[in-house]
Amino acid sequence: MSDFKRYMKWVPLVGLLLFLTGFKVNFTNEDSLKAVKSRVVVEKIGNRFATLYFPPGFDRNDNIKVVYMLDGNAVFDIDPDFEKLLNRLINKKIIDPVVVVGIHSTYNRTSDMLPYFEKEIVDRGSYRPNARLFSKEIHEVIIPYMEIKYGVSKNAADRALFGFSFGGLFTMWEISANQQQWGMIASSSPSFWVKDYQVYKDIEEFGVTTDKIWYDIGTGEWNLIYGLVPIFDKLGLEYGVDHFYYEDDGARHLYGDLLERIHNPLIAFAGKQDYNPVGMKVLTEFIPSRRTDRVFKRINPMIELAN
Image (tube, rainbow, N blue to C red; front, side):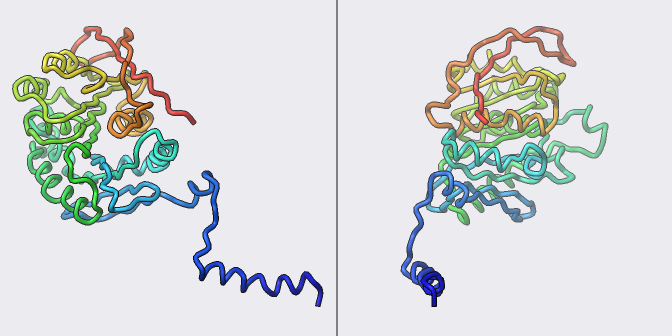
């Protein structure tokens, strides 16, 4: 028998012994990132489905931060790939690992997220302002489920609520008129116009119950939300620390355009110190509006996500 054949005869046995004795391969950093993958599953929580994202190396004992994302079925099902974006932010150490709970919308989406009666909306269909019922479902069913089953942090400061369009209105209403506690909320392309900007009046009357507020809009939209900046300033919130406003040049009222800038509020919520969006610059910008032709200013967080 040749030396080569004798060697090959022993290869399977050596491999078995290494496996049984717990031999560990020393991966390079790049290999280990490929070996440890994120996980995305869809589960039914109470009467509603949710898409759940677990970061690479997730351990239920980590007491991890969690982002509750409204319209989760839409956000996870379109390009750009939200899971890949989250992995990049985490693997590049731009943000700490987070769990994302993508709460699915239903055919009752408009009613679920409307906190105020708005004739313009109700006249288009059988919609009713059921935001309080939806909020109760989130706080009494979905959040406890995640805390008990997956061990995410029970600290309100470690919870964020992100919403788009009517969902953006819902998140801002949660911390004003509804007075629910969150570590951060993000209102993207929010429909603050409902009931003639009633949410602004609620903020002025009741204040807010959160540590950080992110609100953004695309310049390709008709809505205008810059009016919140002086309201928050009057409440004593520090710009660039407690609240952040951003206009995305050319962005439209589409989920795909939202995902192009969603790393910004994620960084504001869970970013490493080097990536915290503090010291945002003020630039002059024009944004069209259906309800006003006033010119406000644009504040650019100057956050760039490397390829």
